[in-house]
Amino acid sequence: MVDRLTKRYLKLSAKERAWVLEIYEKVQNGQWVGLDVKSLKGQKDTVRVRKGDIRIIFTKRSDGKYGPVFLERRNEKTYRSR
Image (tube, rainbow, N blue to C red):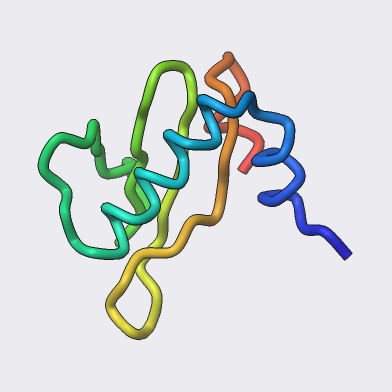
């Protein structure tokens, strides 16, 4: 069964998928420099990374690394539907 994150990833264009993979690798390696990162209000250990109109929300896992939990194009419902 394919999860929601994978479905949304597969709907992106090839260029956008490359962006997402690049961002994911940087976050996993702790290379936050050059990324548009913002902590989400009211959410402990949760950050948003922005590239164009793509938003990826990461949450800190128990091992201390960040994992993606949400991927969406920006619209008026992006942060409310989570």
